Amino acid sequence: MATTSLDKSKIRILLLEGVHQSALDTLHAAGYTNIEYIKHAISETELKEKIADAHFIGIRSRTQLTDDVLQHADKLVAICCFCIGTNQVDLKAATRRGIAVFNAPFSNTRSVAELVLAQAILLLRGIPEKNASAHRGGWMKSAKNSYEIRGKKLGIIGYGNIGTQFSVLAESLGMDVYFYDVVAKLPIGNAKQVGSLKELLNQSDVVSLHVPETPSTRWMFGAEQLAQMKPGSILMNASRGTVVDIEALTETLRSGKLLGAAIDVFPVEPRSNDDEFISPLREFDNVILTPHIGGSTVEAQENIGREVAEKLTLYSDTGTTMASVNFPEVALPSHPNQHRLLHIHENVPGVLSEINRVFSENDINVCGQYLQTNEDIGYVVIDVDKEYSELALEKLKHVKATIRCRVLF
Ligand SMILES: NC(=O)C1=CN([C@@H]2O[C@H](COP(=O)(O)OP(=O)(O)OC[C@H]3O[C@@H](n4cnc5c(N)ncnc54)[C@H](O)[C@@H]3O)[C@@H](O)[C@H]2O)C=CC1
Ligand SMILES: O=C(O)CCC(=O)C(=O)O
View 1 (cartoon, rainbow, N blue to C red):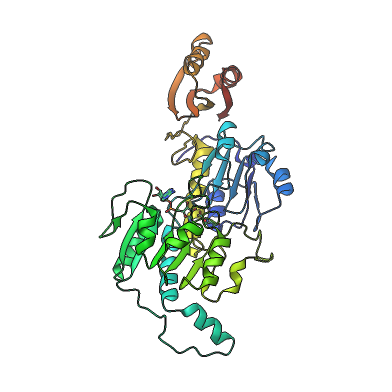
View 2: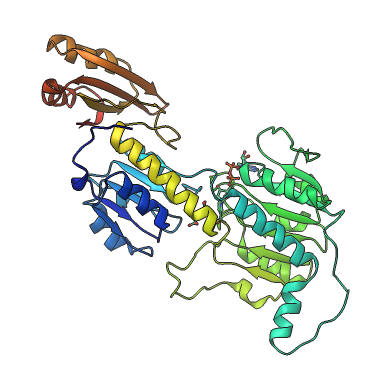
């Protein structure tokens, strides 16, 4: 698509946590060259220093973009999460500063579903203990506590993009699938929605969590829920580390009540692969511990890199905010031969009429105008003839409730 964006060499992009090469390729192909690429998460002090110069930042799940960090991000236009979860970003603080947030809601969902399916099979067969024993010279040849997956009941908590895919895969292996979700959901295949978490836990042989991190899911799975699980059942968590109370899980595992567990996410995760992973769960051979790699496959990372980098370039080139997590969604055409003003304001009455007054009082012809609002902010995009953009920008900055206003050339 032909675009007339800002001089791209001046747009600074900071990419952290080793996002896939496909992101770099996509950005380079779109003409963005001023990119700092770091393979790991950086300390908060370094983050505050680096974010001060960045127009765009790309992160995965380790980098915490708190209100405090964002206070240092005067130039930041957008945050690009190369993952699904956006709980590591203070979305309210980003919105208040007029910073758009993007993510990749689908690209790694199949990878998570495949991982938990594999873990369920391995745990039902007692493979983690048998494997650990063999590595130490043991030989646990026995059918005790070793089961087929066929005919077992799977209880999915959070029946969204990942939960539904897991549901389909599990049914294809003969599992009976039940799910609990706070929203009424159309069941896929023969899955059945149950009315309460307790009901789900009381009957499931395998329980798997696929909820986002929100206030309602924070520590939602503790001693009470573990007590409601069937003896000999399995718990799996590949959602977020703040969902399961690890101390309570440790106690339950010590009691021998569960056949096993698979945990991919933890309340505190090492910042880099060189740091030690500390968890009381390390003592159990019947627990599969994975380093937050539910979505870490070559396929998923390549797709995410491309998908999120495309969202970045589209927003940077044209102002398009489709699929933004926190911004009103506007799909915009390119603006050849015109300049494009992007005005982000608090969603309060009277702003639009003030904006329109800027154009009528200054005799500026509006070539195109687009508006969308959400609960917090309004996003107005105005295309004007090139010679008027500087004057319009200056005037628009003084419109009441303005958060941020900039121009795309
Ligand atoms: N381990 C890993 O590497 C990965 C982890 N994830 C995590 O998995 C989560 C889920 O991903 P998706 O399925 O794509 O999200 P989704 O948004 O499609 O589905 C989440 C579902 O959880 C439900 N839900 C929300 N609060 C709930 C509650 N209190 N009780 C029961 N259900 C509730 C929602 O209604 C929704 O149906 C992500 O938010 C992310 O945190 C995602 C990708 C990779
Ligand atoms: O791969 C990552 O860094 C995080 C994956 C994840 O948890 C997500 O997509 O929400």
